[in-house]
Length: 330
Image (cartoon, rainbow, N blue to C red; front, side):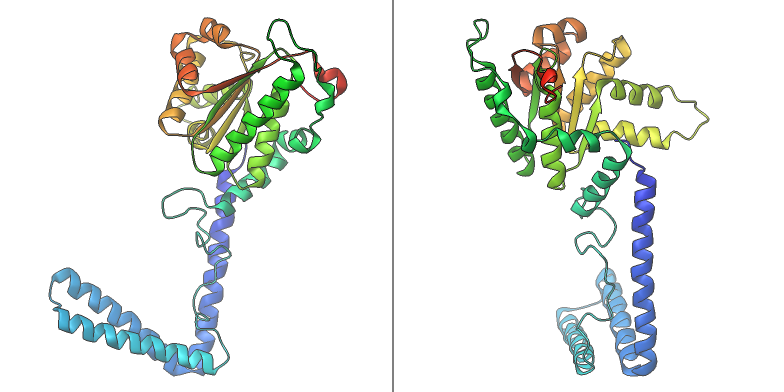
């Protein structure tokens, strides 16, 4: 993922600061004009601290607890009555964050990314990488089935058009699985120009529009990310490299486009296995597109990677002539 997460999180810090400053200013004005409100808030705070301390120390019996709880309830009701009498909402003196789901932290209680953060990341991704231009022209809305031949391939026993429709169906099933919070994996392979990148881009477009965190990388980019992180200067600040590297493992959806074009060595093979294996174990969804079929993947990357794909990925082979001459697919 080629986004400045530090910059984005700094934006969230600033949003929280602004919201908290606004709340403090409102409280100061209301306390000045209506001193009873400050007295009530002080009592609520002090009683809350006292109850917590007594519970921790074990010095609060059930009767005392209920009495204090009743008094706290009375204070809260009185505060609401005052605010309503002044034409204010009951929560007028509470912090108003721009996102009520995460309180402008970017993360939910289970430590997953809030939809607002996913949207912000996707906005930045559109601006800072070529995926924005890619999905504008390569998405399900621009799909043209007429460019595929209906003539049945003797080799495959099915026509390119029928196979294209089958691939579309599988991609929609992948999208549904991800949106239902179920992990799913696809290997889309075939000759150059049969629509692999088009399908990857279309899936990315659909998921990003539904606030899903999609990390779209070519295999070349993944190789660079791994090298930059693993071989960075020990004395340099490689925090950005680490974020990009961990995103390959942790983002909700990873799309690896053009696997097999990045060159190959034992280091990259090991890194690729780690990414694929850890994502499977962590139930993170992945799409791989490649000119290589399973047998070629086994020859190039070895049995470990091939077996993980065979056992955990749905595969679809795209067939037909190079459709790039139609300016539709790559």
